[in-house]
Image 1 (spheres, protein in one colour):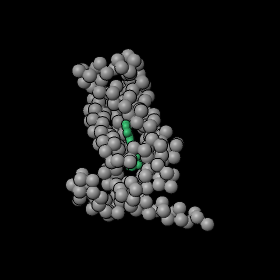
Image 2: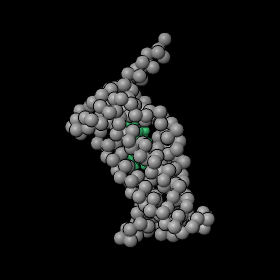
Image 3: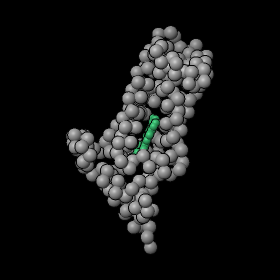
Image 4: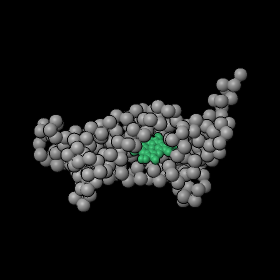
Length: 211
Ligand code: HEM
């Protein structure tokens, strides 16, 4: 595609940040499911050994949290819910038929929901994970608190896995989206169709730059 028909959506550091989160998520989710369900214990062997997975899981979880926090600080302003989002949500059946609704900015309502649910799940995962992290922190907490932490950790993990399944499905389903996070750019036609307000902002900034 010609450079004039593309729009930059993510810089290289932003993409590296995102893929660190995604890699950590896959490792933490696969090992976590391996710990949680006896029928999935075999998953632990594809990560080396169960012992290695057990040691690495909490460290990888902390890296995921810190990396996501950087994304959170970058994007939270773009993910604030606005009036157009309500219209988008009310017309979700049209979105499912690949029609656009409302004057969507950089992110649509579905993406915003993924964003806020992800940070809620990650905060719960970190807080409960620290409480049950043997041998470092768990000895400082009474057994009933550790049991509660185990429950919260499992529920938040299942929640995050479901949220990310929706995120990945949308990223692959909406044609033209995946290049945003792989190569950093999107087709101008994609931006105009799915994020018209963001497209106009970019056009205005480009015109302001021109002498
Ligand atoms: C594992 C496979 C993943 C794929 C294929 C994927 C794909 C993508 C793509 C294509 C975008 C750009 C969307 C756009 O700009 O419109 C994106 C953005 C984003 N992704 Fe992912 N992603 C994955 C995993 C994750 C994970 C695990 C998280 C967080 C726990 C995450 C959080 C985000 C966030 C926060 C954004 C920016 C959108 C926003 O702020 O609403 N992604 N992803």
